[in-house]
Image 1: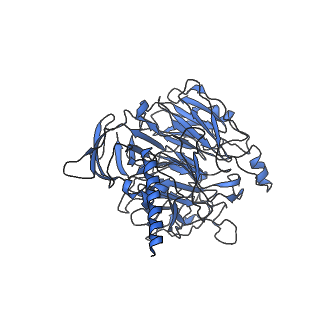
Image 2: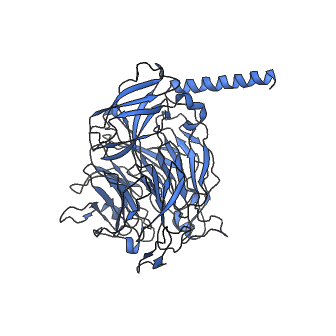
Image 3: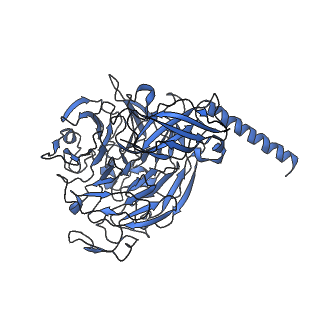
Length: 556
């Protein structure tokens, strides 16, 4: 290399490092576009539903009533279900487990139809999967995660839901119960497990928010457990705070501005911004983005795909007089997934710019994710347009955060059956991972690595635990080290059920004796099951916006 080139390169690297450290001192690092990686070329099953388990696996599934998938069950297994509408004798898989460490998949066996169903993790880490279509409408299925490929779906439980739950939503609660809300033509909620003699609880709010019998626009309602133990429910463009124990609506919030509904089939997305120990985990702020105009469904049905909504609304639901604060995304978006990244920033990924969520009712896929830095003040740049994927991810696509900080993306099947060729948007069997900017090698000196935790599991509420970690660049007076815990969601139809992040209280990092870059901090667990419902969480150490790989912790 010529001397002039060497000097130019050195100057470039010096400027890049100075830029990195200036952002780092402010508690954030500069955003680049990130990168995409193809993980599995043919997963066999399209990922309509997806979740990450504490055994470092990802469970995905679609539905059983469309006939063959592209992956046979193993060991000669088949299912015989006389109620199935497509194949009463079916040897094809409709669910898969992805092993993150080995980048491999294996087939899982579902028995009844999981089409447009819901789910949540129980306190012990078991995935409780509820409802679906026809023969699966009242079913409950259980998946106990494992690390040795020995686990599969338990389809044998005799206890059923009390109502057919198709397009319902779930939320884990502080008392080890899961609430299941709504569904097509269902205007009530119930609990899993059901207590003796308990029935369903009427919820007139679901009738009030229904647009019509043809286009309900309140399906897959957004649910978020608030800091007072009550449940925030958003449907269509309205929201309430529900005391679910006494079936009393405590508060009705202002209608969200904007010309259009936000729930299925208009299909925006929702997230509760990270809770913080700095205010005792009491401040709860909801972010809702995207959706479709009022006439979007009728127009799409007539073959006219009109632009989706580009507006987002934020509301602090714990304020004395809550109100929506509106801002726009870089472009219109529907059917996108909204995830909390390990550093607390928000990723908006997947979706379309025109149309609605239904069979062949959208086009113009949005290939670029958006990053949203919610902690920045209004008026500053909060949205960033990220690297584009080459795969259209529209109706029936999903995404989930992985423990290593990547985001797994799968699914997209806009058709009633699997159509792999001869169509503009074929059924997608490929699995991808998106690596956000913080995984760039530029930030390797800032990236923490957790080396030890004590204790590692069954941490009591309010207790302290010790986290030991290394940072090659060291911890300085400008360092902004944060300890966050994250409950991964059950995602389907742009709804991330039970997703939750908390920024915990911790002591300043102390250098471990006889080391140069290993530190230790005492971290305080969440104070109660209201702040963090019982279960498994990913623990991240975040240094100036750059997260470590996660370690799993269990709060109980």
